[in-house]
Image (cartoon, rainbow, N blue to C red; front, side):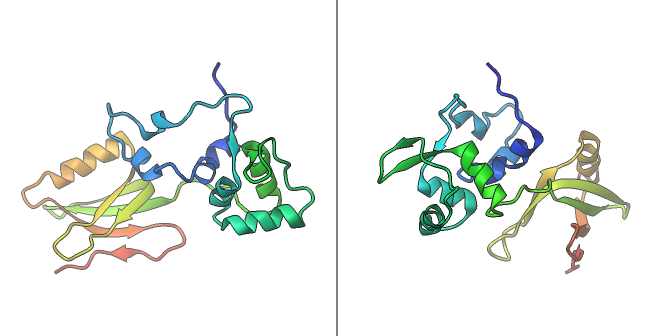
Length: 185
């Protein structure tokens, strides 16, 4: 049986499953096993969380969740477990966290604009969805930028970088931030 998800459930995946390495999911190479394959399949009544799991979802300490249980009479009741280790229905807890502004629904992936110049001086603008910029720990290391793009953009970027001297970053911008220009040596 295939479980269908609504848009809010999909948007909340990264919030609800903080233990998943979402960067690894986004950067998994075609033909390789997805890190999502290791997740337990959803079974009716089987999606339960402990207090520590609720704390991870809300990005707070376990003590905060214990306080919420004491102070809010509408906090979800345990569905299983023991008095010491109660288990809660994950969907009910998420609904409560949303209703009490303890978590928010992400508004969608960040979109960045990437301007790259090829060795011949030709520059091209690319859209990069859900970008991930990883800066090297030292000057000898290489910075890396990844994200989702269309196949055509990926091909055009590869073509720009294929020249004798490769390509250079001219500008990287994301909504709500100032541009990050490339500084020439």
